Length: 188
Image (tube, rainbow, N blue to C red; front, side):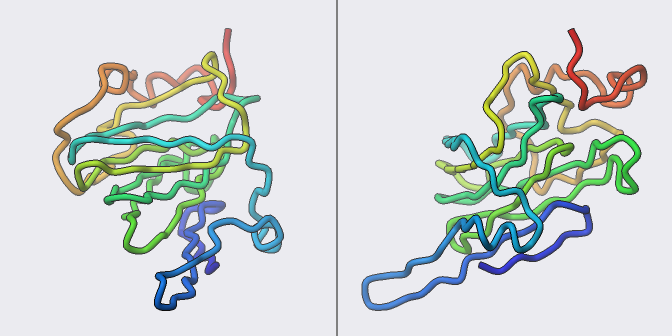
């Protein structure tokens, strides 16, 4: 694997190194030793898959509050998506800065989303399939989110949104929602 640091501390691109022959190709997508050698999280307790039927579908921006914060290793295995992350760690030098990257079956590239980041994506193709490993078990009571078009982030999505869940459209503005509290803390 090839590890490519990003401008957001802790976020890392992980490229595969395919070994090809007449049958096709093979590549490692995760190795605990290699991740540890790069100072990345190695504990992944759950794997998820997301199938998105229509191009232009937006999912996000999501995170889990402490103590259920999660690292995510996100990869698109069919079709293509544009994945976005936002640093929401209070006190971070890159607070509210975002990064967007194309993920797709053609490259096998993955994005490591560290704890303390909001995450979402928009499908660039029909029938996009995203798989991701997470470091913590899902805790519904710790679900948090912000709107994809929140002015606090200013994400420049690469295409118009055609489909979005009511839940994702209804998240409060990030700064207003966090003015009185830490977005990463769990509240009653």
